[in-house]
Length: 419
Image (cartoon, rainbow, N blue to C red; front, side):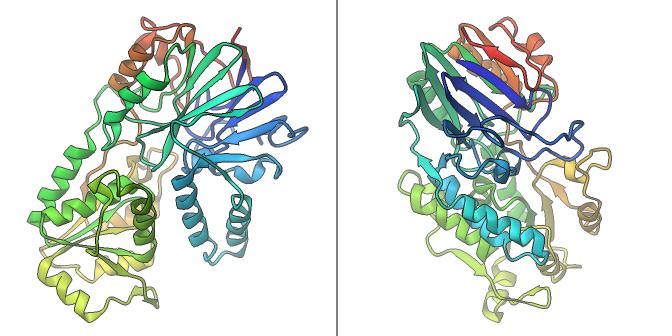
């Protein structure tokens, strides 16, 4: 078995990893680079974006753009594998983007829809083969729903590829059991390290939900700027609103995402059950949501939580309640978008938020903290080493985890022979 990280040894996002055994190649993720990334060279990968691809396949850990955003650069004959629910969410997301005004962008998203029309879906815990390589997907907790780790085995070598994961989400308790069952006798871990520069532990999603509940009890009209594909955050807000005796209002796109997840997962947990208590606003005109009078009266009488996105429809909905002491705006996304010192800074978004100077920052990371990484490494006990990926600080692995296992630092494009 040979490992090549084509991109991602010293950056977050845009990762592309190749696992090769014999003539067969498994590629993991093909994502967009994050804004401000130091290297923006066009990625050309033999067996994926060029050359002979007859024995290549692409595994997608989850649907975030920094993991799947360059899918169209893979040659069209390369088969793509991803989780079934993640595939449906991604389809719904791309379908919405086909309606954006810019024709060129809309065309790209139509091409993505055509590309993923024949995606191969895998089942958590069920092993499948590519050539002589065995792949076992493990569903884990991340800010994207239906995200996966992979256990890959060939020629007596067993590798755990972590993907993006965390230990403080609603579904994180299952991880140690999954590792104990499926990740025995691991030789190598290829591990994300997004947060290895942060010394503080992440707030749990449970604790964050509790804080939202208390805020909703204090304020009647609650607008939460968050990602619609952060499914667990959306459901968390839904339950927080119910506990605070507020109604939950969202647009049709968000409601459909909730339904996609509920259809396949509500039988396993009450967390994804919504019954008929989601109020869906879908009609629009002249940059405004057309909220029925009956619903508007209910919103003003009972109070509500509305998850919002950064577009004119939602900001106009927020503006309808401007000047009311019972209005509250929350920012529940990564700080980088509103940090003027960060390459991902969005000045337009910051200006809109600053219109509400008392807005509250309430968020927790979609990635694991140092404590969670150490716990995973100690449980797995990789026999031959840990290879960092998806991190701007790979050198930190030696300081933090060098006593647990050998740390193998690779450069982009460097091939490591597992034997």
